[in-house]
Length: 279
Image (cartoon, rainbow, N blue to C red):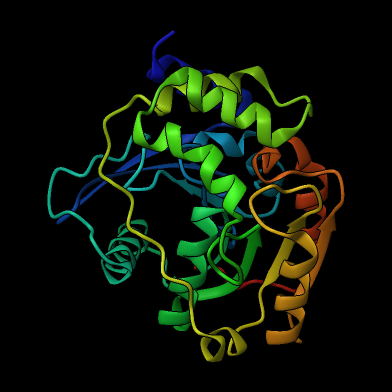
């Protein structure tokens, strides 16, 4: 199976009509998978590194019952977004790219939900452009409140230095610790590792003062090998007392988001129960 075939295979499992949107700007072409009522409050979903936006197949259809959902392929990662123009090299570049995508979609403000690297992009964007972010949810955010654990980095390093399908799948199986991760998710992640893409922008953790200024909804994976769940919870509640924390006791970092959709969607809908503005 090719990467594009694997991507399409997950898209068919969204079980709702999906509009595939192509936006062109100075960075190239940004691919967006959109679903839900056209006049619904907008929600932007940003995936983790190597996952692509199709990985939201268990989450997006449930959110689409109430919201207009825009799942975006990152311009600096595998997926259907292509960096054929200016190369993003800094967080500011990524923020310019994301603002351009919102403009292309006709969105002034939106709720954001990101996982892992996508959570870091969403968080830093919310800090830099609070006027564009109506709500913020972070799924096991990395390099936001904590750095990555050394054993996680060392285990991931071979796949980063010499990417391959086998290394990617082996790493994900190691981190998910026997959980029944969907075989199509593993296959797509493995194929994504071998796709040419623009190097992702190196993360830079926000300062404590910047973190104190926001109050996101944070989902903590209780069995994550990427960072210490208890320390992450303490950091969030200490720096952002107004933040809401949802503990996902059985989740690992890479079993999110697809394997825990019911808990994630329930947490989002509870936190976002009051009316969001429509565009």
